[in-house]
Image 1 (tube, rainbow over the protein chains, first blue to last red):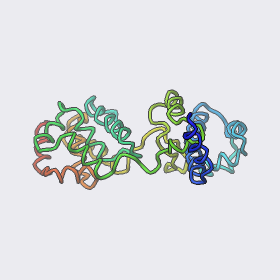
Image 2 (image 1 turned 180 degrees about the vertical axis):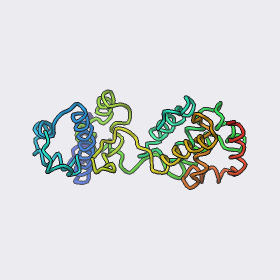
Image 3 (image 1 turned 120 degrees about the vertical axis):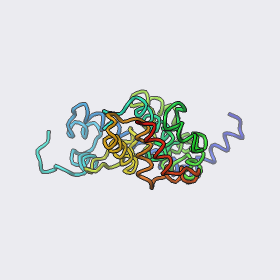
Image 4 (image 1 turned 30 degrees about the vertical axis):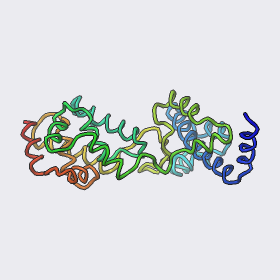
Length: 77
Length: 186
């Protein structure tokens, strides 16, 4: 990379707008990826508990987000 | 729902999905069904619409004019690039597992409140209505199966979607088109 390009690159990375845009894009990407993977796991018969464990969140959190909070009082595997 | 659809009718529906994907739209609407019907020039519906002055290129241009080709929810590849993530590589890997367009849409809640991934492109309420009307047309005509012509009749009967507007703008006369399609279906 030329010095000029490096300078431009460094300047860009300190620009809050660039940084915030990147965070937002990454969040959207993560949401899409997570929904695909959770759906795939459920189709493969995984329990909410197992999915939550691998995602590093509580079973209630993943259930509320993906099952729309239905059936929380029911016993689920 | 598509069990009694003939190959031509199914192809039109599949083409509608592809058109929506190609245009990077969030849903399959009546306008994509219209493009699906026009996509194969040898079909009854494409021929009749052609006789009435509407072809695929014209309809496609009209759809793009009204809706554009890039939805708001499109992932920001440049922003991801700035932190070293190559979206095209991610997309390639994900699509190889989950199919084309798997990353193109945000997840959404279905009618049961379940959060569903954007993997499959969904039909709008209106587009589903068109397919229902196609089935009803077929039953009323005692056709025995559902052909692409019935789907076209469904589009006309529904009458309010973007497809109907595009047909009307192109000067298509609905009553005479209906008569013509019905005649060629029997």
